[in-house]
Amino acid sequence: MTQQAVCQNPLQQRAAFNRRRVMAGSGPQQLVENRTVFEHHEVELSIYDTFARAEKVQLQADEVLYCGMISGQKVLHGKHHFNAEFVPHESFVMAPGEQVAIDFPDASEQQPTSCLTLGISRDRLRQVCDQLNQANPLPRELGEWRPEQDHVLHLYHTEATQQLLIRIVDCFLGRDSDRDLVLNLGVTELLTRMLRQQGRNFLLHCARKDPTLNGLTDAVRFIDDHLAQAIRVEQLCRIACMSRSRFYQQFRHVMGCGPMEYLQQRRLDKARELIAAGHGITEVCYQVGYVSASHFSRRFQQQYGVTPRQYGRQQGAAALAEV
Image (cartoon, rainbow, N blue to C red; front, top):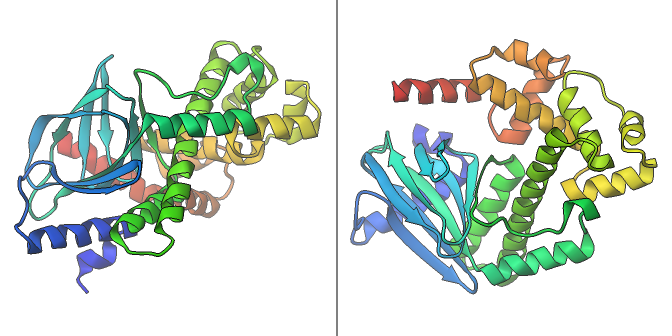
């Protein structure tokens, strides 16, 4: 086994396996965004490999399009001045009719840039929205679960989402007898995660704009403003004017996790932002409320699949590549 294979994460290994199959056949049809398509029921998986630098390559979504980065780096350009780097462990979701232009600043034959997309029907997304509205309705002030229109959702996904993507890719690449069931459950979970992230973003926006909208927005604003401090559930219940049981129920309905788990996730989100901005690891550790550097590093790796120092080096290398 080569050193490169040892260093590959499971999703990169599957992309490399697919690339070897393509090369063993007629070879890639094109050097930029060479596409391998797998279709099954209402879901279409595409794995894209790019072997040469390119700019302003157009990508349009006919249905809901979930994109996950596997290796290398892209730069995305969309309307409303949307510009963002797209690197491994990140996802972006495009609404039907949305379009972006993509740059490939460092793709080569030796180190191709790879990503995957999942095209999911709007009917399937509406089904998941209906299920969420029935089982876990949002507080009345926040409306209903619904897909965002005219929207690109860009996020740094967790290790749990990474493992979910691996399971979905394995369903397409393998011949498992339970393939239909696993794929159905996997896509439903992925859409649910996407909708919950939209719900979190919306609630956080409301909390910053009008923290008194309801009890949850007040509590979320307090969490966001006091990440470096010790926060107790009893404090949040008082701020939200709810009993402990009702607060947990409401919080989990919207966020998909408990308040203390959300606090840890927001601390790690903030830590990632600060590291990307060039702040030192030890400084960041204390700034987001951790008292142990080793504990901070362990939790960061559990959440994002890399240590804080590894993430800092990745961001530093990306910044140098732009110069």
